[in-house]
Length: 324
Picture (cartoon, rainbow, N blue to C red):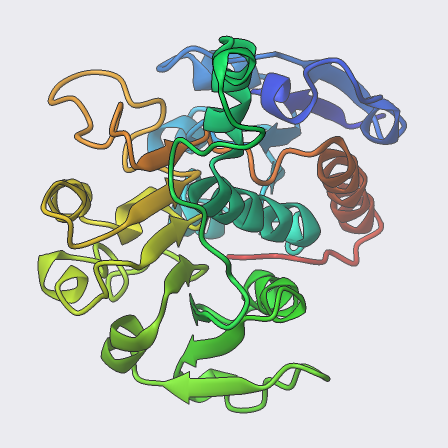
């Protein structure tokens, strides 16, 4: 009998531009675009295989699903699943590592370039007619900053951090990285890396880009004290996790001129609804995108195929990418 497979939040991975066929070939597939909070157990009832992106699967939900044999996370981060509860039931949980590296690195640099070149601003004023009215052939509405020769400080030299380092070096930037014992063997041909303690890196960097996981040690690692170490001309980029930042402290640093700008693809609460209002929303020197660094069509296609590969390996009795 074919496995019964359900995707609880398929809209994010596949809003309609991909084919679910790789997963459909592995069993009887049902895809819910979204699952309302509190309805997870109802949507997954009777299915052997549950696939989720961010829809939470907690211990109470797992307890209500006697047929559940496998949970596949359609992402790298697995904090949406109660891993211990799944392990106690003997249910493997898998993730998909590294599928989005090129896209996240590209988006990281896109945020930085927007901060230093203000392409969006200048496009807007041209279309608003300011160039037509200008007495000069060229004008600027914000200072333009050249990145060549500046120092790019990277916190988290995993696959994404290394990809960002390569692009930064190609732009002529000097590369510094926060020292960590596990990173001693990192070697990027053609890229010279200066390894520094985090505080020293923050003090010398012209750009600080965060690519580390969210742990108890990294939660709000960029706080008021560490922001005071940074140059007032420096830029902060975060495509990691929103809670790496103390957001009110970042807003205060921007307001006080202690930080030149911030480029964020992640926030502490997503979407940023409710109260209190996120203090970075609407800030003129903070560029925010809606957690899309991972979401290029190419990355999402890799993710879908890799998730199917994880499930197929489980069905063969040779599971891979188990996180619990």
